[in-house]
Image 1: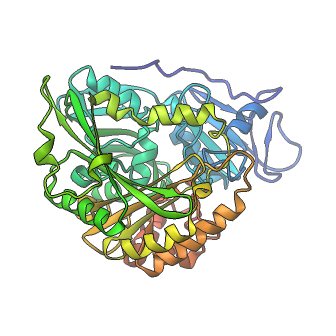
Image 2: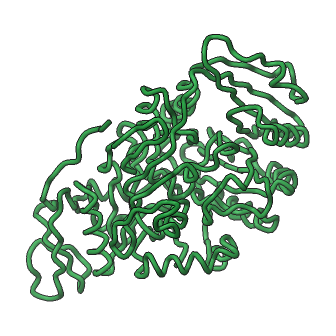
Image 3: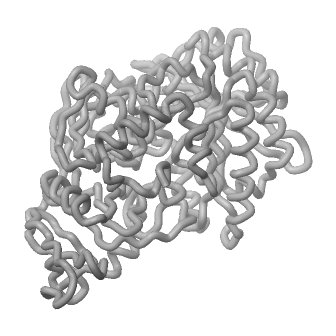
Length: 491
């Protein structure tokens, strides 16, 4: 199955004239041969390399709207070889390169990084949406270009009775983007991260080589690149697992007023695996302690839903508040779309969004959440959410998906949508304070969030025993530090 074929163009367009190269002396693009300096001629491309102001502005921000970093140029590749050429061009001329997932819908396409992680300061942004082909779908996997979104793959797979086993809550994210940082969703307790469902990748390393990597071929690169934060290569194609898709989902919302009871029931469900999907949420209450919600789903086929009674056995939610909803599997997988549409209609979508994503050791989850909820207010969330649920760390198979050194960890995902006009600076300071407290308890960060003033010491502490391996892989696969500078891991 395919979407629109890649265009084949050889123009390298600018505002008023064709860009012919990069002046490495003045660090500017040239439309004519310069009289001084060295001209690095742009290679012939199948797509376009553009420097027009409108495009550069579109690529200067991300979903978080907290940073502004305008690239020198934007590549809209007409082929994978265009990316190979541009990576080599950038490497030889001291430029940076970063893939931009262009996630979203309609006119809302942008990188869904939160704090400039996909920016290309002093370099070239690559528009992932130009890599938009679903190559094959088989009963066990799909091979796709990594600019394809999970929504596109899910709908294509559902027509054949299949589904990706692990989906993010919001599906309109590029496959390459999520597998590069992990990709967490409501089935992480069964399948791990989306990166753990990948069987093969085609990747362009920072040395400009296009390689295929699998668990048995270029194994070292395979495990480094998946959840590797884009530090070792640009993933351009991936083969991801598919499983039979259920027809329907019976969805349970269970509410709690007591944190201890909530944690006990979450871990009971995690350990016995009675539900197919399991997440959780903290709901701040003005002037009082927060409420907690477990959202679970069991999938089934046919017209008769499972009996709820055994599914709720030995759980202790507030019974009168429990809700059970029967819906199609697709409706459940697309559940975040309604929330996103509401946020857009209320004017929150394009505001700054200082998110904070942490992995907490289960033994410290109560301590951290007690402290956090004493400081968090409904205004800290605005129109957003605070997700909070457990998974087993042994489900994660790639070394740079860093989690606490415990068998069970909790995702703490503060998805802040501040009220329009709110100054985000205090929220960023709050993120830093919570992060510093969490790390004293053994927590790790998930790389999509906004944590200011990360130092090299912070990064070394984050990666811990993996830091030396990380630097070794960086020196091997991206020795000129050309790729994905926005993560700021090595600066």
